[in-house]
Length: 270
Image (cartoon, rainbow, N blue to C red):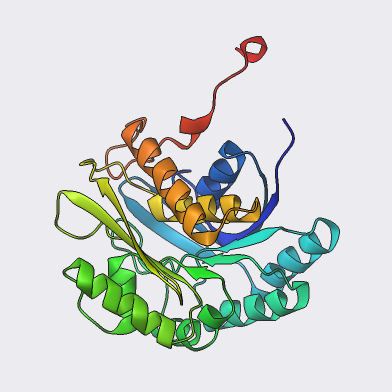
């Protein structure tokens, strides 16, 4: 099997392997595409929380993006953790230079354990500039609340927040409903032409580390292969749900999901 497309991932590293760049690479690979990376930060973390965060210099981030893309042109880009104004500015500069049309933004703000991953100035520039440059933004409820300065306690609130993000310049929005207190999962996709609600049974488990990273990378992979954004979101949600349901149950805290849930090993490699 040859890779179906090429994805450039701009995000932070997770030493425990469940989220960030590591989850992104696993997802893109498991769904049959080729992953490239530009690492924005290195974290020391495990399933119980984040110990430390070490930033990569903006210049080095820019070099990773532009030098990689100059040789192997991405079909799509997934953006995750961007922790400072300088980092966001160099990413914006690089996006203009390499001119890739399909871009998925996961506005990572808080780690599963509660550690803050972005400052107020960065949120401001993300809202004013970055969301206008991407194809889709995929906030969870806490992130959508921060971006829209609203309280979200229902599906109607999620739709309202998505509309506010559209007013801020987002082309398409997927608000993830995992934080709502309900038996069913509701994920809201909003474009200029439609509102779609993806409903799935909620899986009760503490092992959901990296679900946001995984979902956005899965969307980028499907979208890069020619699926519509709406179909890409639908298929990515199914992949994540299946990966949660078959999780390996590693670690003492918020454990990783099973990124290999799509893979069948050929007999000769067993």
